[in-house]
Image (cartoon, rainbow, N blue to C red):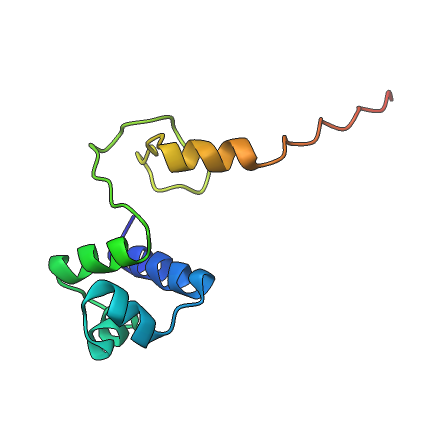
Length: 107
C-alpha cells in the first residue's frame, strides 16, 4: 500500500465513523489543523501522527515482509501478497459466498 492509499483509508474510516476533525483531534491528541493536514490531498503525516490517527480510528497498523500471504487476483501490484489478519478473516467470513457459475449451454 502506498502513502496516498493509506491516507485515503484513514479518511474513509473517519467518514464511516462520522467523526469531525474536532472529534478526531480530541480522540487522537492532535490538533484539528494536524488532522486536516494529515488527511488532506497533500497529506504527509509524521509517524507519531499516523500512529495517533490509527489508534483514534480504532484501527491497527501491521507491518509484514513483502510476499507474505496468498497471491492476489489480477490488477494487484506485481509481487504483492496480502497477509491474512483477524480483521481480514472476519470480513471474508461475513461476506456472502460467491454465486455459483452459470450453467453452460450445449452448442
